[in-house]
Image 1 (cartoon, helix red, strand yellow):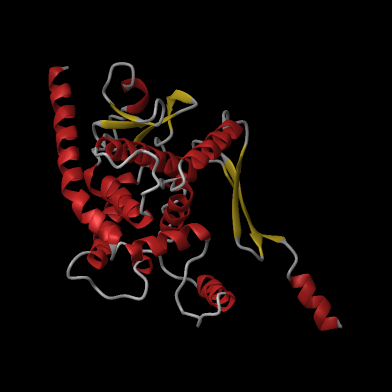
Image 2 (cartoon, rainbow, N blue to C red):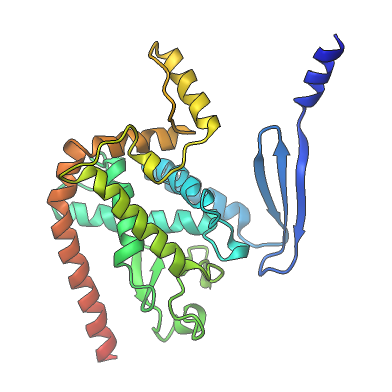
Length: 301
């Protein structure tokens, strides 16, 4: 009875970590809830907080790939400790805006190619690859800013009405992302490690590409090449396999979003990979033309 009470007591929720961070652009209280290891950040007197949450909820309802991609990429960043804004990483809101912008431009490009703009044909594995390729290789951080308003568009950071808010002379390679609720606020201003993060995206893209391109590398889990499996993931995979009446495995994924993304990346070996190979050259051509147009506009100005 005594042991049972001790075990029950040990399972109660409690704070395992608490820190007040004041030397940042946005002061916050950071704490962790055990036994779930749930990290929570709280900031005060910041405008647009509830409105931002409501906006992202509407984006997730209208963009089915947004939720699983967010789960997958949040864990990708967290596993490398580049997910904290106060240390120059990419926070949740910035990451979601980057994904939303990517999906907006991708939908428009697919619509122009006759694939339809509903997104029903999207392969999550292919989308993950394209996201990593965009922000790891193709995106011009020096000249280009991101807006998700008006169905999404890019703007020159040096534009007269944008330069004051989005151009940082000391960090010309910063990522400029407009807050859709306040067009004068740069959500990416604090991500001062973006160039290193861009190289991380680049490496992850090339790693995944090695497993979905001919000749393909063999592996039990393609996504595990960039998302380190944990003991908790293994337990969830075993539980999932037991519930499905299958033999348990050693590697797995932590949530529904990553699970779907993992299946889709593995699926890229099939039809998804064919779509990737067919569309790769055309997307690269589109991006080169887009970059040339920006340079031409810049020269004219």
